[in-house]
Length: 192
Image (cartoon, rainbow, N blue to C red; front, top):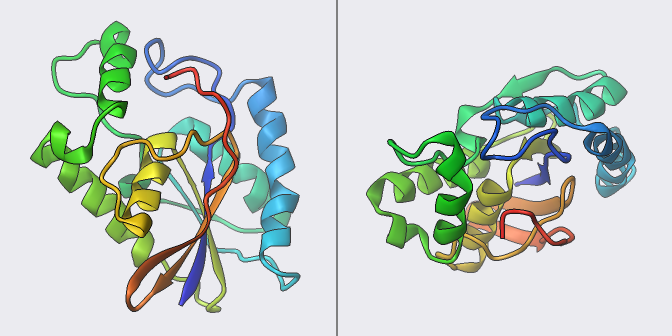
């Protein structure tokens, strides 16, 4: 059994409808730096894990770099924990409108492509393992982390919690499936 800490990236320097892969802004960098000690504290005083996984998107990789630097770890990139893709044909300026509509519904409402995205994401998290059998730290995204929470509580909604930037959601991977231990703190999001 592995404890997995899912961290929503720090605040991005640009919106989802203006830049497909922004870095963190100054607030986001401060959030990422502040999350490091909270992550270490959640590991119960044992030596901090060096198993660090990140979405390939820059805002997550930058968030991960703060923790990885502090504990002397490398960051493994995992495409399956990336942000929900926008549909083909939706141009940059239309992305937020599409996402707002999608967030009001379920994965099933979005169709097979998105159910498959969710299932692959959840499977990736459920099979993460720390060689020392302790903890894994994963830097991911609002919708992606909500998909994991949904798998834990049996809810097909895209949004279950309005997770704040750098909030930490903790799950345990058990033989019976993922178990939600802490759903992370919430805040208003600009998407909604």
